[in-house]
Length: 526
Picture (cartoon, rainbow, N blue to C red):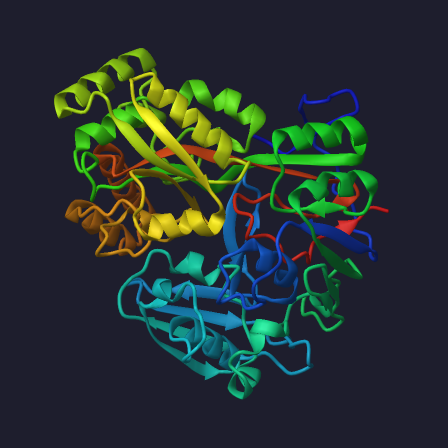
């Protein structure tokens, strides 16, 4: 797919944008954009939500960052690091830093700040939350031979480290301020990014102002930005009425069409696959879901290929694939995917086999305690679709849609037969994305509760394989194993639909709603 523009004559019809000459960015202006949640913290290291990242990312830098376009190529590029290299054995990473970087308080950023930030991520002080500490445990030590060089020594090769170094959550903090108060990032946004913190009105808005000491010459282009924290149903009226220029998480197809109908060529629409999905998790610690025949039958009842198009018209659900995002380097080839339970193109044949498996397992009249989240987009349409598909093989489901806290409580207590689960990460990386598929003794986040040494060994093997081609083969073998054993069953990957005022320029569509939010390249054509 390509970036798309919706024109005045196209209510819901997409016209592929023709190549245009690069425009010279204009200086000035305030970007007003919406988010649909209040940040629970300003601390990048502690958070797991876009509600934090979207307001504060413009104030921070990492060692690396992601640049590109989801429909072309996304890759890590330098941020605070101007160059880097990994040793042949994968045990040493050396970064050379820009020497003209300053924090918003005017102090110089050096290798000491990188070291302090990564030590906080890996081994947080008592009382400090580090949501991704487990991803950084292979860091054995961090050396700072001079102010512009930082060296990471690894205890073992880690194929995901390049992506961890580019993580939008690995913000670099001031070592001096951390020494004074390790909790300062929770409430104070003070980094090296293109914008410094302005006024924050809790539950209402957050402002960022241009940092004139930003190390990238000529940037940022904006004078600042203002984030409005609103309910989701306020976004479309806000864009249509001119209160908001943008919303960067994603909108539904219906909302896209509504904005295009009202604003015509005054909006730009960008679409692409999302690093977010919905899947089924089977409670393998309860009968009969400890029986692979039952799990296979339930996934084989679902028509993914036939359901993707109608679901894509009414929800964020769209793409059919395995446990790695369709179109990514790790994705199973379509011909391999179609051989696996639940992904055959002949749905009638699949359902006949599903009925046979249930009969063989002695559970022809199965009734399921099916736990789902009470969110209209896209959990409700997904749940309704699954229940309908199970009916085709004689299976009934008690579809319980629970408020978010009760939904997570039910999963934690294992009070479900089958539940709708999700994976939402910042990058296509199996070590980061597939934690929920491991044996229960290996991963606290694995809902199925199974034990499978083959999966665990394949996961560990891919994590230590730094050769990309070899790693892809291992990951695809892991994907096949999980899908065949049906501890979990992938349903659909989401489509990311961004509808912004056409005056917003320089923003890139990424596969994740966590990356590409530093706003240093964004400008307003006004």
